[in-house]
Length: 336
Image 1 (spheres, rainbow, N blue to C red):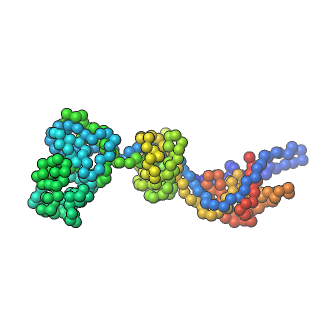
Image 2 (cartoon, one colour):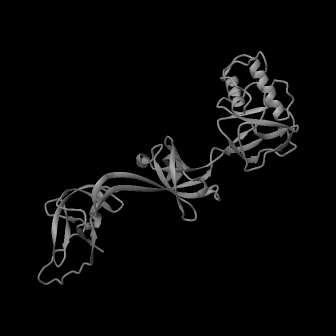
Image 3 (cartoon, one colour):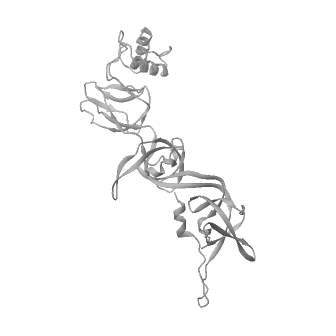
C-alpha cells in the first residue's frame, strides 16, 4: 500500500537553470484524468489443494480388505472402506462416534445425528431427537437391509464414522491385509481451497466473504472468496521467523482448477481506498514552493497551466484528487 511518504521519489520537479547552463530536455506525455474507485492490490503466494487432509479409521477389530478408490467423494451413507469384507460407512455429524447404537441405550446427541442421517437417506420419517425409540430401531433395520448388513437394529461401535461433510479419499493409510485401526485411510475435503499467508499489515484486504482473484499456473485468472482468516502465526522467512496471517479462499468456479492439485498460485487481494474520485498518475505531481502539489494541464497549442490540487490516498501508481480546479477528461502532463 503506497503512502504519501513514497511520493517524493516520483515527483516531477522543474530543474533550476542559469545563463550558462544548457536547457534540460524532459520527455513528457499527456494522460487523461479519469473518475473511478482507487483500489490497492496485494499479491500473495498460495497453494491450491484439497482442503483439510486427515486420517479416518475404526474401532472395529479385523483386517482391512478394501477401500473406496482414491479420488472418489464419499457422501453420507456411502462406504469408506471394508473390515473383514464388511463396509464401514460415512455419516454426517460434528460429534465423533464414541459408542454403538442399540435399543434401550441412553439418550444423546449422537442418536440425534444418527436419526438425522437416516431421515436424509429416507428411512426415518419423524423429527430427529436424542432418544433411540422403536421408530429408530425400525429405521436402522431398513437401512441395514439396504446396504446388505444383518438387519439386527443394532450398529456396533466403529461401523459408522461421523464427519461434518462429504470427504474425498486421498490415500489408503494401511495396506489391504493389515489390521484395522484408528488410521485406515487419509481423506480431504471434497473441494479444493487456496491457502495463503499475508502480512499482518494487509489484514484489512482479507475479510471473510471478500472477493479475490486467483492466478493459476497457466496464467489464467479465476475468482475466489475469502472463507476463513486465521490468527497470525510464525512462518520461516529469509531473515528468520516472521508473523503471517493465514487466509483460506474457496474458488467460485471449481472447474477452472479441475486439472490442478497441490500447486502454487498467486492470490490478488484488492481493497477500495477511495470511491468515485478523480484519479491522476503519481508521476504527474509537481511539488510546489512553500508546500502543496499541482499538475500541469495541457491546453492544446498554448503552454500548460499549473493547477494546484489536494491529494487523497495513493495506490498502484495513482493518487486520488480531493480538491482543486481539475475535471474528468482534462489531460495532465506526465514525465516519461
